[in-house]
Image 1: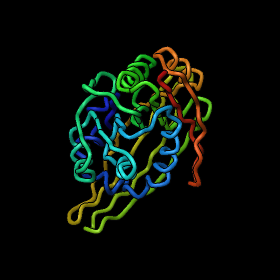
Image 2: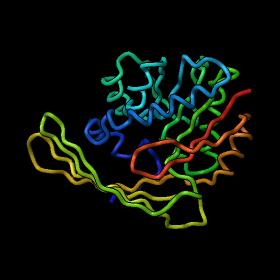
Image 3: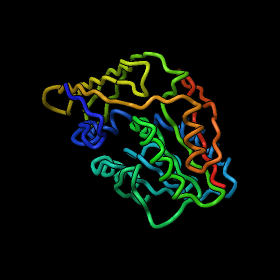
Length: 250
């Protein structure tokens, strides 16, 4: 078993990064990206240029780049390589969303579920500050955590995909809360990876994620300088709707 709270040390985003187009193909993000696009229209300025922090394999950007100019930043160089193959027309850079600084500003900043790896309020605040400092006045930051404290329930899921080259993945994910009094939950992942030839590999890894109340999200956004807003996701997918958070920069 591997247990890591440092995303830069997680095998899923390093040695297993080449598997992500099979684990989580871009087609799975189409409807979600469409809804997120509606949130950018809440900005008080026209949105053309977007900075995505924690962009991972670039699956959301694959759809959003049809309408916006995307600059993608991730802590993992291996995941950036995956994204560069999928999105060669987007600018890419390596950095930690808590501390990275780019010498320009944007109309919007987007942080998908990589925000879940902010396991303390201080980490969350630092990521929000990065977003704030990279926004033009009138711009909007969009944060998409998988869970909030109010909506969280212990869950398990299993799924998988096959690739044209014969490789295939099957996985199980089990999310639970060892200590309901703190701001952290655990997800146990088990991935079975079958290459085009050779034996199946089984990888187990434990991921730690932050879990904050809606009030905490709104409070910290306000502390950073944003005008905060909570939005309930609209989705036709068979899963619970998420609470997403907007930060409007005055």
